[in-house]
Image 1: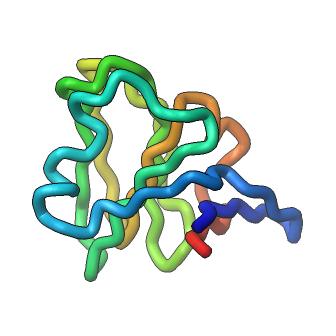
Image 2: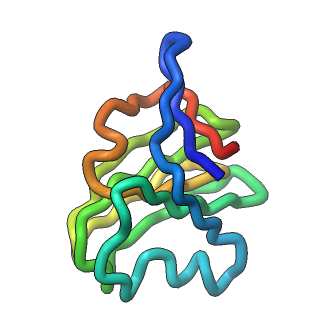
Length: 114
């Protein structure tokens, strides 16, 4: 599984090591209690509907990039600081990546899992 990013017809892989948080427990845990994540890693939260979703960094000791998407279109991009970061936006999918991995991603870009 890969997380892919496209802007203006150019596509690239954001992550080649992808986990899916598709249960209540895995969504609640997220990246908490991990010491680090690989450079090519993503944690994808697929939700069944579009709602305001938040991401917090409690018990996450490293910075991350977070993408909130609706129908594969990026709605918000944020870098969240270790331990204290927080963000929220409306989405049907949330993707968490290592800090810097989404530095070229902008609101309106297409991001998808394949």
